[in-house]
Image 1 (cartoon, rainbow, N blue to C red):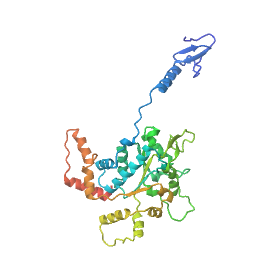
Image 2: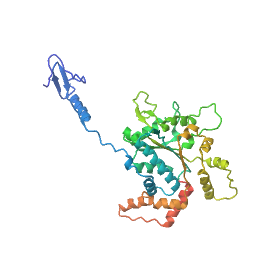
Image 3: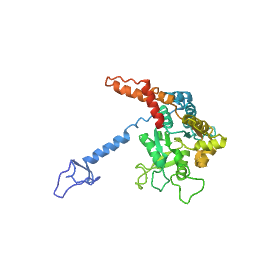
Image 4: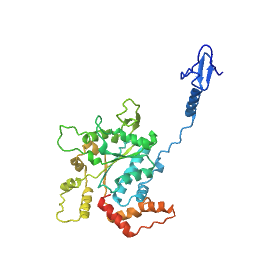
Length: 366
């Protein structure tokens, strides 16, 4: 029954403590127990939430439906121009990774290790686009992190766990989906050791970050702060297992070709050699890259060991840039033509205009 104000004073909700004047309705139960309309609504919401069927999660990628390397390569060709060698290596590496995930980490007493990837090559050659396209074809969550913003735990900067928070957000906080996602860490060359000799000053943004990334890349159960790090020390943590997350690291690694050239005995180009031929020479040297070269560059042995697939990307030529402007499904010329067509305007790019745009992009190295 509903209560009213009585001579003995006001009645209060036994659950939230509000008085009868603070709510629309106060309902009496046996034993002088009362509940207000607001608490009734809250109880109804809780019951509905718990009894509702679980939201339809995106299906995991079964082995039978996993795209073959040739299918992955074909899809990469729809968006990425050039880089044929890199696309083939990536297609096989990603297929092997998700085959391991789908079949379990251990098959017939053989433990399958992760095949994380290191992309080496100049800026503006499609390293990030390759990683994004791989995530699209496999329909898995994807995020990008900048290694230059990371620091060792306890110092000013981003913790490595914040990378996982971005992936969780990309998966709409579906942890099971996030645990099968792809993380691309850009500018990985910027966390190389600053020198061969140990310094008195701690290298918190170089070797310290490499050490912090080791467990994440290898596979561990990490505690991720949902609010993004150190500013909320008392918050609850989200646990995520990184054993099945594919890490792709990319960087320009300027000067690495000199280390490779010194090892293989390549002759240095002197005189007035064209910049284009020099870039091609550098690309040829990077194809001969070994783990020893990466160690000399400043990556620590444990970090290199957790990136077993190393592939170099080539610098783009003017012809490549011309194709990028016109051929991919998301080519910028096609996008502008489509946007203007919605206003009944036809946009046509002349070859001279495309060549000028390609030359400009080549000069800016973008």
